[in-house]
Image 1 (cartoon, rainbow, N blue to C red):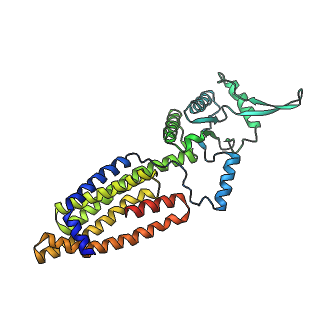
Image 2 (image 1 turned 180 degrees about the vertical axis):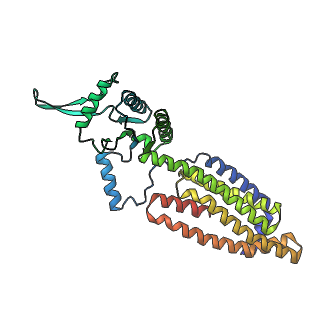
Image 3 (image 1 turned 135 degrees about the horizontal axis):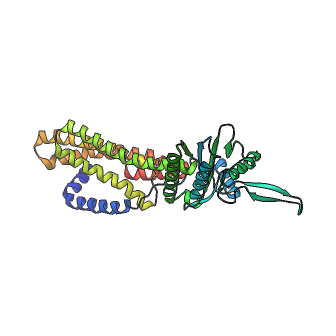
Length: 353
């Protein structure tokens, strides 16, 4: 069986190479459409009781993780200049595309009893930007009465104040989140520089944005690093630029194959699928070392390229095929977990391995 396979491969090597080239171009085009995943990673199957309870919570109360926070320590916040700057920052953030609402001491609301109609009225503490210090002092006096917000929106004893930003749920899990988060970050940093204050930003939309962008950089970094390390090791072993270059072509094909497969299946890049390219580099280089070592030994013994290749395909090729098949099956076991992220990882990894 293996001898027939070896003869078929060697007799049709030009056709096989052309098929690989066409497949490489096709996968490369499909890989260009792959995007980063902006959704929160779900680590539990959809049928898990905890996940069901979580989905019911979302149906009842809406999307979670849609709030960002900006905080600072400013003992002079209730001076006219600083308060007006805080007011402007609040309004500017509110105008950012993707922001639904923005709440701070510069636009807090209060509930007051209306004895005439026997109901509660919602009253804005700040109707407009104050023009005098007396107006700011009056606002501060009203804010100090709102014990509901003490420890949440501000801390009077520590002179700490916060802006709470509600983000559109459609933006939270989309690429638009990056633009919104970094636009807010730019405004906040500029405010800190202008007023000599240390600013802090938090909240799940911001944390996920920073994490996703770090992941993009690290995926590219580890792919390049794995290729460089593999190339150096191969050169130290074979002392041949030609051999290293040939294996690197196979490495690039393997990496393109990963992204092309995700493009065909409609998967996004996640924390798990992002580690597949370096993994494929290792497997590709390992297999190449086995094959080339055997080829060199056979060629030294026979001085016949075709005969040496035939022996290599029969012995090392079959061994590599079987070991990679068992590895692929091992990774395919993730498919039965019921977790989408693990299932995507299992499918893509098993196909490419």
